[in-house]
Length: 350
Image 1 (tube, helix red, strand yellow):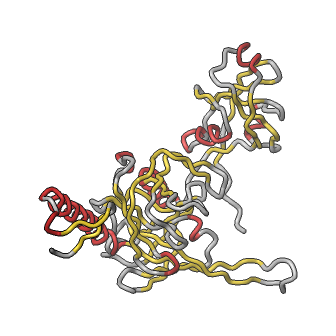
Image 2: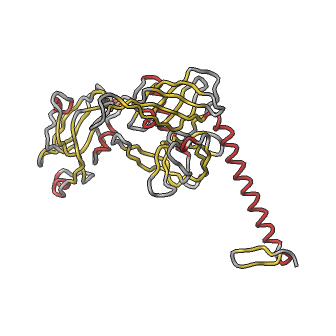
Image 3: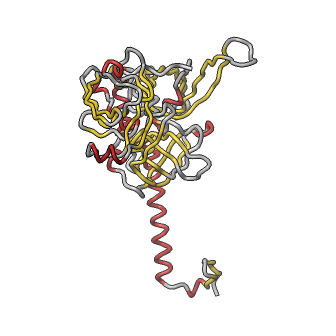
């Protein structure tokens, strides 16, 4: 009798295995080999473009500490997306950095400088003074499907070019950044991410980047997020061109509010929510438009506004300096106002 082979249901003598069992085992081996080849192929293509980002920040001492500054060091990941040294990473990795340095996959170290930073999408572009560098291709994140195999490459805890693989758990998620804005169409994946992975690429088996790894839900396991390449490509192009992302600003504080059913019926509204104007800054576009505290914004242009996030989405670069219709409720009366957004203020440095 041949050696025993252990199965979940017990042990079966090798000589008693059926041809179907052997064929299934061989097929499983072939699938695992194909999976391995797919991952290694993606890493071979994109791995050389992945960099380790190290930063030094000068922070003001507070409390009982002596006056002056203290230096705080941190880091994350990034990847070259052009051969002349442009690197995509997360905003929270490099925001407020006094010094930035990168380490290439071959160990070469180079100083870098900040090209542009957008905390509202948690993306940033830095650059090194070099050419002919390996770089990754940005793919189309809109073609992703749940269940699709993806690979994450980064530098968790300083371990360079660490590879994890998983699947796309979901697409079309929303994620709130540290600035308070909501990012739409975020990719959820179960490819393991750890501190230091931030800014690294999320890659398909064809070796194209479909996302920029950005966040992990703690203490959950296997719930990780990436900014889609469709957003990253747009933001990167604007940061390279202008050094910033231009957004509309009207100068008001608002909060989400539910509308009374009588108001909804009275004005035949399509939504039961709006944005309550909690405060208006003196001299700002909102004040010039005639907005008062207590007003409720229900539409901007021809689009319904049901939340502050809706308002943010509509205040895009295209509306800066242009008259924009606002529909508001003032007590029981519906009013039509016009606001001319100005360019949003840059975020304050710490």
